[in-house]
Image (cartoon, rainbow, N blue to C red; front, side, top):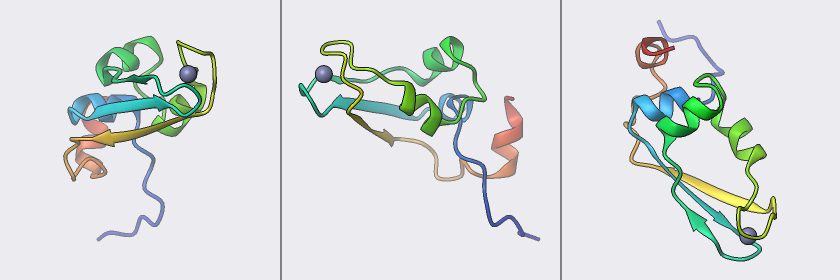
Length: 88
Ligand SMILES: [Zn+2]
């Protein structure tokens, strides 16, 4: 029975487990980076939600916080309970 209206947000640990790729770019200077989710999960914590992680990002080139990001390459089942409880 599926009765979960609010699935938890993807975390860094989920992203790493799902082999997702992050592409981050600075809207101020155009700097672009692809931080490794596994590395980010170690630096921060695997249970850090991706939106929280993103909110902490600062451009390493110009110091702007005006960043945007996309997550690509993740398996489409990353929100399933099974994959969530797997690695945490
Ligand atoms: Zn910048």
